[in-house]
Image (cartoon, rainbow, N blue to C red; front, side, top):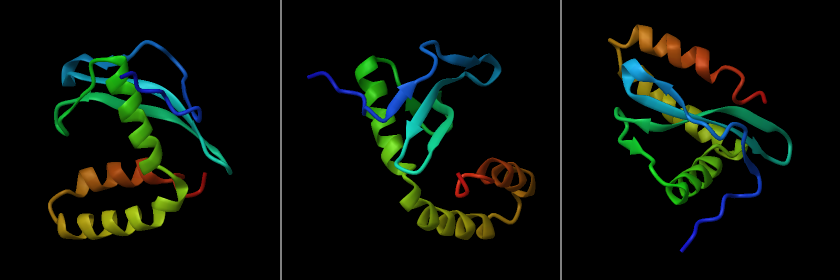
Length: 109
């Protein structure tokens, strides 16, 4: 069975970008939602989280899932969970700062 890519997802670039030192790969996508678009990079090879996408079917299924997870109506609950998580991580000051810089604008798009 072939997985269809959600019509609201556009692969901006067909070639994956690689971060060779960290053995990571990303795809550039644009997610279209009713009130805005999100344009960014989604990890498809990321050993720290166990993501390892090899085939087009796996990629489409994965991007469809990420699209659903990133729906704007899910942001408030996700942010509450993240605030709780980071409050408990007392020794992750640098990582928390990095996270904060990435999350800015996500809820304001």
